Image (cartoon, rainbow, N blue to C red; front, side, top):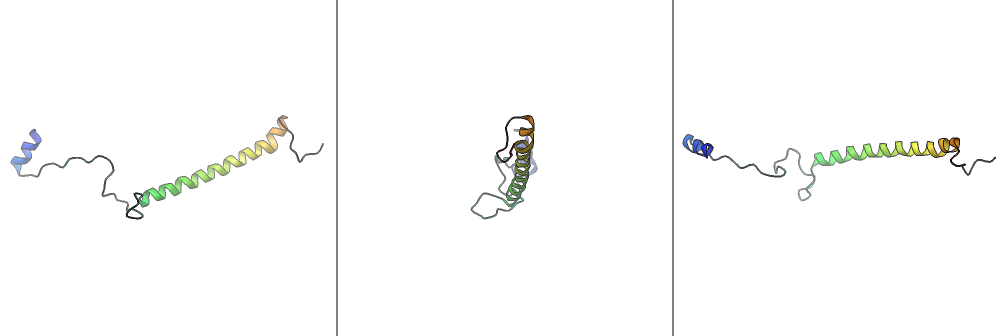
Length: 84
């Protein structure tokens, strides 16, 4: 314990043990004191949900194009509203 002895000789206080897990003194305050969700986490959730919404819209457009145009053009199926 060389570090502890050196601190004692120099009159320094003992070194604080590192805490495991998240820091209690986070730089982002909680939304509600009793709810363990910070404002930063809320903003990250909003960003992810907005991006996921745009991905869903893009996937819907791609599926619609395949069902409406690519599938019938490839002969995979015939749309019900097309009369021959």
